[in-house]
Length: 450
Image 1 (tube, rainbow, N blue to C red):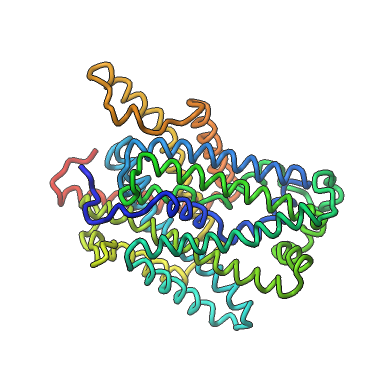
Image 2: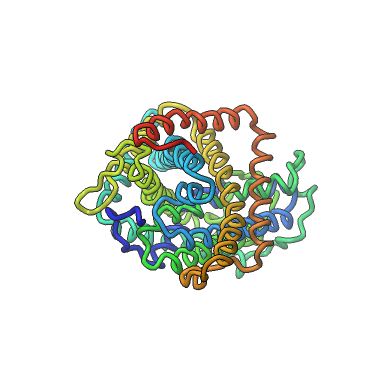
């Protein structure tokens, strides 16, 4: 039974693509260039790291696309995990995103926005907290309107954020004089590198957000076709943008200079190309870019909380919708929790933990595609194949593409555990705190635990 009667199917494929691109491309592409080069140990492996990370992300997106086409409901990973593994694991997936991933990622993004905003306008650090909270409230206001408004905001901000990427790529290709692919390790950095694997890990963090659209499966027009299209086309745009800007920057500026400039490398290239005014315009565009990313999170993530509340495993007020049929209860819950997190940990810690947690459930969901296909095959042996299953999107290159997604996900998890074991264990513990909450609501509903 469709669980999204309170929401409207009014999001088209263009808005879906914009949401994917807008959610993924935030500030990381502008600030990660130096880190990836230094970690990889050279310009060529750095470019390959962006491409390799993009291929893993594309494999993940293709895998999720088939699952989303088979389960075209609002709620994303929560619904997928419930359908594949049962209600307990579905709940823990939704719980982790509701109380940890969603608030942490929105809080960290708004904190990054506040830091850049304060630097641009010369404000002191004491204004950072206020700016971050006002940013969340501003995007919340947009998302409490008809979902065509935040969808249009996603299209506009995505179009704007692509401008500097196109400009840097064009400048590097047509005016750059550096041999981007032949810079040895010795000329890049004298410090020990983390190796190609850790460089790929850095790019995978920059690609995070590609699955956000799955939370809106119940609001997409013709989701069995448009969800795969939006995810795959969106990821392809991001991969081209990331690899393109990396190559363009290394054509415009020597890799050792990019490493020396660090977070200011992109500003250095833009200033070199377009002067100081270009550097200031880039800052404004990055601010708009981060706003677009926060908008994507606040547009999609509350839909999962809404779906859980509709199922009766979270308080009913979280399923409340306003006169625009927007899930006001879930949106405001995310707004409040993200604002409160501004008073706790650093933005970097929050973003790292959020990404680690979400990849745990990505991994399980990728494995779930094999389970879904096996179930459908068994069902087809008993009854006639369902017509709708014959026409939905299927992963090309099955089973190799899902296996690549699984291996990429395991790489993220193992690398994070090795590099930050303590924080990773804390995050896992916070996930399992949700079990008593699930038992309480299951008993309240009179259901047996599964």
